[in-house]
Image 1: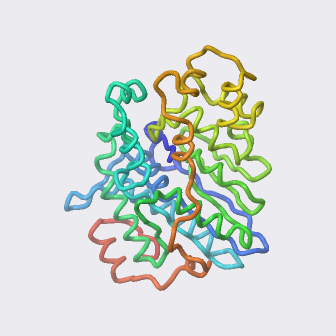
Image 2: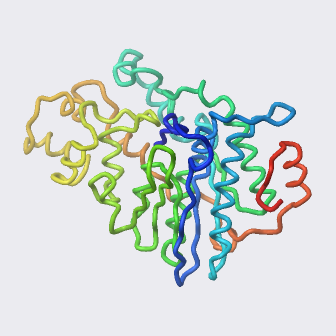
Image 3: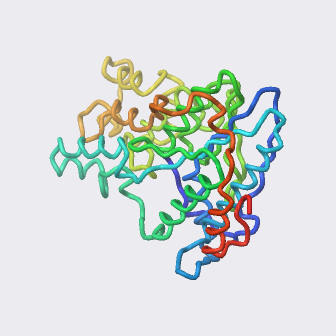
Length: 342
């Protein structure tokens, strides 16, 4: 959910996204990729050096994405315990359950109230500047198609977001396998709740690589992974247009969570008089001034771990036979120098 891409791309494509190093273990390893996040990173990293096919199809983000994908595929292929990768994508924002929830919330309130809570649109992700991503959707779709042609598992399941697919798969397989999560989405820290799970936030042009395990997850926000939901609900998620409680930033939220236990406990302390404050944030949290109720915000920032009909066997993520003919035709049509297997 929480993604900020506009600052990516301060350097040319070569070297903008560095290769990873993975240490194999005794157990099979399932690599679960936030492929939408990767595609957006690739898109902005390559935007200064745009390339197009003869028919005008933009390919610059796709080229960078496929380079990143190949690096991970090569890493997985060398694992003596087997190669297992899940590439997960987002549907359009308006096709998600979170979009519907915010639509319903706004519809049940007066316009004046809604405008006091949201500076711009009250839609989920409605505050994003879409003018900078006009050529992203076609490249995102091509990335999905190519991975499927190459024989890899591709997850896309409206009304769920990529995060929900990743959360469900991680939760399902973490007890028996090593799980590597790939995203720079800060929401994913809430998934680092088991000794077998590692979140890898790859390096990019303006940010170094960061890795988080169960032992180090608290270092991201200053709260345990099981309180990341409280953190995001209190401080907000500006990228996804979840407002948070006005006047509470991440630092203050961490202090409150570590002292009172969580967002609901903080409100309870205000309500029963253990904590006294006349600040705007206190009035917003207790409903004295316009604000989105904290329970709803917690629901919006919680990654769903119960997406139905996803695979229950790790074998579903092993690569199958690629469609070489289709890959070659796509490579030729898009004038790509290299395309995974061909």
